[in-house]
Length: 130
Image 1 (cartoon, one colour):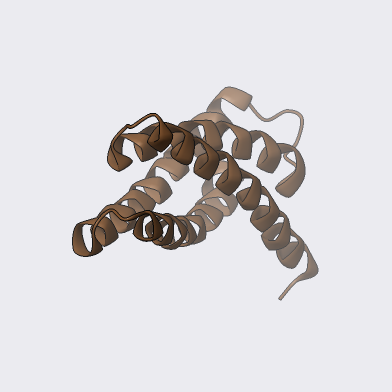
Image 2 (cartoon, rainbow, N blue to C red):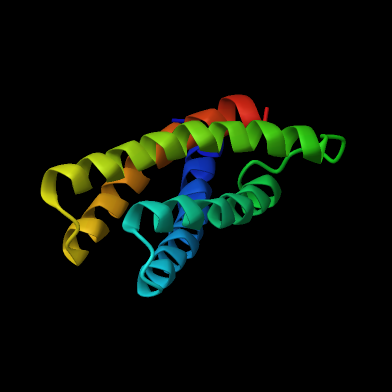
């Protein structure tokens, strides 16, 4: 595997960890405000998308200065929507199958996030930060 690809994967993982904390922190905050776990999750990930776009743009994929930030953000958001819809579908499926106990919500969050992040890396590398 080329060294640049390994570096990108490691950086994407680190940025993903930051996004995971933002997403998860907001999820638990919204749950503590008695929002449904479905609505709480739908509200938590847009903030994580903005944080990860900025970090990935400036650190993971180090785009050229001539790149249109608006177009890039639109492409990145599109990629994130696909990844996050997959993430949310996995999360929702696990909750539907196993209930909404705290441990189940956490497991669904972790499994959904991992699944979505795999799709997001491929989309970010190939499409958003080309």
